[in-house]
Length: 578
Ligand code: PEP
Ligand code: MG
Image (tube, rainbow, N blue to C red; front, side, top):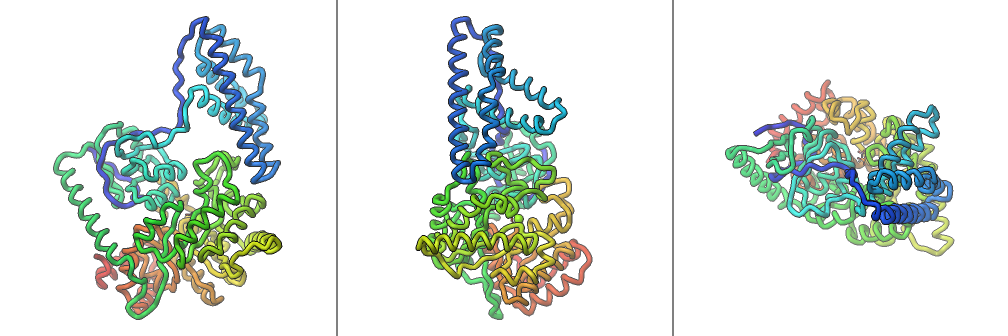
C-alpha cells in the first residue's frame, strides 16, 4: 500500500481500478508487406490523403462561414502539406523499396520533415511545424482507420490516471464510466478541476509523478476532499474509506434536505445562490441541488470536442433550451472565454508563452467580430424565452467594455430591423477578474448592470500565481488580505453605483468564506451545484450583523492563514459546521 498526496480538486471518495490514460498517440508497428501488397498499400495511402483533404475542406468551409475568409485561409497551409509531391513521392518510393506499411513510412518521412523545419532559422517556417504535425496526425488517424480517442469504449467503472487532462478531455468524461481522476499536474481552480466538481467526479491533481507509480488495474482510493491517493490499500484502510464514503454521502444527503429553502439570513437579508454550468445537460443536476438560477454559463465548452464552430442557430438552440429549462430563474450567459487553459487547436489560436496573459477571452472575441456577433445575436434572440443576462469575461478596462457593448448594439439594431424580438431590458454585466478592472470599478459600474467577481483569475493575476500550476499552488490563497481588500472595494463600488455584485469564481462556493463574503455585502453567490445546499445552510444560520462583524475583523488580519483560522473558529462558535 502506498499513499500519495496531491491537491484536492473535487470532493468525494472513489474506490476502483486504475486506468492509465495517455493522449492520442499512434503506435505504428514496423510491419513488412509483400510485393503483391505494395499496390494496395499505395491505394490505402492515397485514400487516406483524399479523406483528410475532404475533412480539411469541410472544416475550412465552416470556418469561412463563421469567422470569415482570412481565418479559413489558415488551412491552406494544411492543404499544401497534403498536396506536397515531394512528401507523397518519397512515401511511395520508400514503400516500394523498403516494403513496409504506408503508415510506418509516412510517419517516418514526416518526422524527418519536422526535424528539418525545426533546424531552419526562420520563424515563419518553424511555425509550419505545427501544420505538418497536425496534418500528419489526421492522415495517420485515417491510415490506421482510428476514431479520435475518447472515453466511450470504457466498459467498466475506472479511476483515470493521466499526466494532465485538458478541460475538453474532462468535458468528454461526462456520463462515462469514470469514477474519479488523478493527474501529475494541475491546480485547484484549473478548468479541469472545475469541470470535475460540476460532474461530481472526485479528483486529485498535482500528484507528483503519479503516472509512474500507478499501473492500469491497481486498486485505488481517491479522496478528493483531502487530496489523497492510496494505491492497493490493505483491508483496514479499505474499510475505513468505505465508511468515510458512506459518511460523505450522509452529509450530502442532510444538506440536500435544505436545497429548496431560500438563501436568507435569520435577520432577513436575501441573497441569491446560483450554479455555474459548463454544459446544458447539467441542468437536471443543478435543479436537484436547489440552484436559484445560473450565475455563470461557461459557453466555451460548446466549442470543445468538435472540429467546427457552432453556428448562430446552434448557439440559439442551446441558450433557448437553458432559458426555458430555468424558466423564471435568471441565467447569466458568459460570452466565449477561450484561452488560458481552455485551448482549442482548431481555432488556430497560437500557443503562447503566457497563455493566461495572452490573446484570450474578450480580446479574442473583439478581434473576431463576426464570430462574436453570432454568439451575441443568439443570446439576444434566446432572451425572449426566459430570463437571460449577458456577461463579458476578462474585461481589463472601459474601452473593451465599450467595444463589446457597441457590437451588442449592432446586433440589437440588426434584429430590430429584421423585426426579430428580444428582451430590450436584458441585463449586461462585466466579470471583474483582472486587477485593472477591479481598480476602475467606479468607471465600469456606470456602463453595466452588474459585476460578477471571477476570483479564479482575480487571485491568479493579483498574487501573480498561475492557477493551474501545482508548484505554486501553495501561494494561491483566496484569503490573502490583498484579495479580500480587492473584493471589498469591488462590492462597495458596485453598491455605490446601485448595481448588484455577484461572485462566480470558486471562492463563492467555498464554505470557509461564505460568512465573510456575506458580511462584505455580496448579493449573489454562484458555484458548482454540489456546494449549493451547504452554502445555503450557512447563509440561513448567520445573521447579517454577525457576518458584517466577522468580515470587518477578517479585514484587519495580516495573513491568509490568520483569516482562515479566524473563520474556522467563528464557524465553530456559531455552530455553522454540520
Ligand atoms: C473566474 O475566473 O473566476 C471565473 C469564474 O472564470 P473561469 O474560471 O472560467 O476563468
Ligand atoms: Mg476567469
